[in-house]
Length: 173
Image 1 (cartoon, helix red, strand yellow):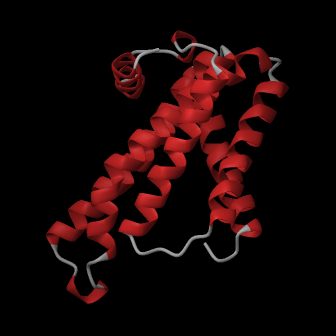
Image 2 (cartoon, helix red, strand yellow):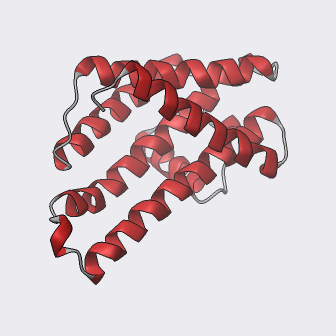
């Protein structure tokens, strides 16, 4: 898959117009997207002045992969894991790059200086978070062949489980 085809597919996926099955089942592409997601996470955390370690980043990446694989295994869809992970990490990196300026603006605003602009940035950040859960649900819907409502519940559940486990394993974040 060429770079431009990957970008077009990722944008279509984020618009809920593409499916994970349209991606090649390429482990090499998955590794590249995992690296891109790590890089986007580093840039995001640096832009927001949040502390992080390589251990935390790699641990969170591994944890999400394990949770997704476990879900795919529960549904008997392990053969679709690579394409599903490609879709999840392509959209994750894109959303992280989109959210970066919003989060940076929020982190640089002192709490006592909140105004309408800050509140709109906060609304934008929350909207992107909700949109990313919906994108994950769309991906899971196609990967697991389930209805969107079930997929939304699974995506929210994975998000909450991920946050709970990650907060226990990586207490500094």
